[in-house]
Image (cartoon, rainbow, N blue to C red; front, side):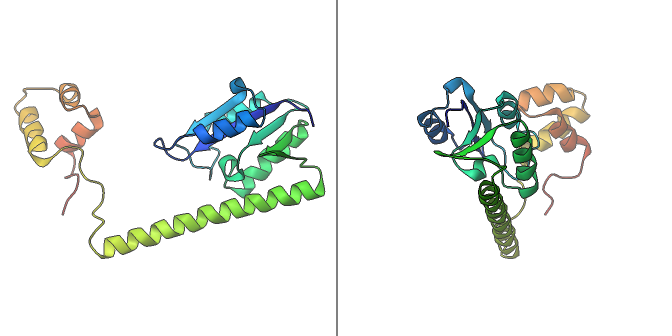
Length: 195
């Protein structure tokens, strides 16, 4: 298989890095200018993943769409199948690490569908554990919700200064380095974290 490889890497949070994935893709023969990346996106949906869209647009008949691990590509069976059908229809093979799979081959299809099923299952188990942990923390009084962006003294000062006509919403947002919507909620809305 000598098809040109196009690589895709993804990490779920902005704090994570894709250096290892990128190095692995380069080692697999993916040119550096053909590696597309999404940072801070879950693999459970294709929505808003510009890097994935760019990678899918960059492949052509005879090329190999390449990822280092299946769950970097997708954690949703329906979307994985949809994308793999599209790639196959365009004559593109799927590279998983050093192996290349043909979606039209019964074994290749079974293997990739199994990986999609496992990836979705793992994502669902992770979500379930998170919900259970949050419910337990809330029950034990350790989960109190999102904390206000600004401390109460700052919020009092904002309300007073705005009521006195000293400053505008925009000026306060700039001064406190927050969005105008935050200032609007402080002035006009309910308390941010009622107890």
